[in-house]
Image (cartoon, rainbow, N blue to C red; front, side, top):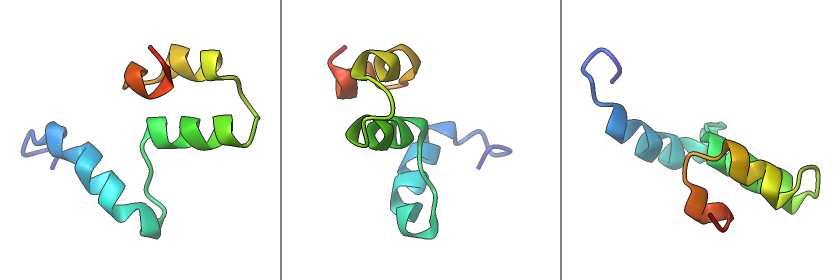
Length: 55
């Protein structure tokens, strides 16, 4: 996908492959917030999709 410059599809593929262990940065950040290992503010600073974290 990268060689074919289909970067926009990468997130979709990663979300679909979640059962196989694939996850996006935002998915990982959401899990860390849920587990109270990081704050929502810390997640917001690093998130790709700021809307997921109130941004």
